[in-house]
Length: 627
Image 1: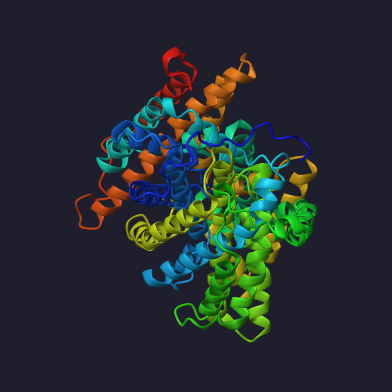
Image 2 (image 1 turned 120 degrees about the horizontal axis):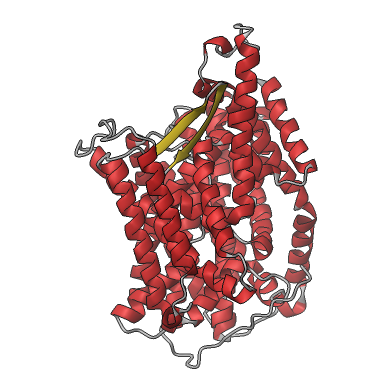
């Protein structure tokens, strides 16, 4: 935290530049929905989401500057602000709401819209009072990596068209790959092989471009820890359980199927999932404990900052220092909490509303500060959400609200809080971008709420579409974070969790921490099928290869090129997935149609070609297109 932020605020030459315009809002509306859908797919597939700020900024500059010849950096800033609202809201929703589908209590689209909108609006309103403290007063302490990087992209606006070409090309490649694989069924999109006499062990890989792009963006270290968890699951724990269980056909745990009759996939479903749940939950708690000093200092600095005369009485009417008025914030928060308490659509009552108010503000404060240090991608959302779920579930059960009703209420409360802290983290990055490019804070805050509204109106339809076509919780869309929330809530309410296996996962996470690894990252890899972690690791290897033997300046340029192309791969596959899903519903596409070839080699070679393409595009020097 002691490292100073070298980036200085930039004020546009003209203070009359257009900012919150109809054009910017319309473009931001569209991109919020698009990137919200893309991140919803990605999060349901892998449990991970990626920041949309830089791709949105590039697309905005390409459209506003390239097509409409508009020359306002502030308009572009509004567009990327609205877009990240859609991405953050989608992340909060898909990490929690599918759990309601898993317990056979699928909410209506109206209920989903209510959950995400109140959560998103609370996230914005609760973060706004922290802006001067975190963004302005601690500018030299909190770098807000994505926000600062996005500001640099915006300030290099003259090059926006070239950057947009990279995203567009990646979009076409990712979309084409998805169409040929899952649309026309020309090749398999998952390859798997056994390991000879190594019974029950197997290696697998989803040969899809989005996962390659994710791996490049998160880098080799995180990707390596993810695949370590996947390998630990697939070639260590599954064979061990299968080996000892085959000599004892009676299940160790009466509630489960006999091991001797199970395949590798069945062992994963009946055993590995619960070990992974214990490991992920513990990893989340450990991550939260690590951030406790940061949490305490955040609260202390926030309340001290709010009492600070300069901050409290800052009545400056400078354009770049104006937030939404405090009276509007207070009234808005109180009104939203009251609506939550008495709205029949959620039925969480006063206990749920108070929990949302308390834990919402607590974790919004934490999220807004943590993202200033580690960035939005690595913010421990799951740790904070799990902690909230445990406390809220216990409170509901103690008040007499148990069983299915108690689980539903707990998951709805947690969903609202998860959405609010995700949105708060993203608007913190956006306000840092605005601070660096000379934006108007209150206009950005309004834009963020419009972005929440635009994405929130569609996220329910997207979830229902994915559930009907791919199946939430299936191998195609396992929704790992939501599945974990369901396991925890269900176990606490019913008391029938196979605790012996979960304790193994808890011990595993603690052991990983003593090995110096990030237990949450490894645990997520353990919980997810190996087929997800393998292509992510390949993407990480590509990034590692592009950074060999180059200095920091060249590395930064290559990372930006690769990130833009990788973002296009993710967006292309995700959005084509939505289109394919829409075509499956009326029967235009048959998801169970036979594949043209069952060969594992063809999809594997195609994926290798895709990885090589990412490598070549990233390292190729184009003097005219230097980013």
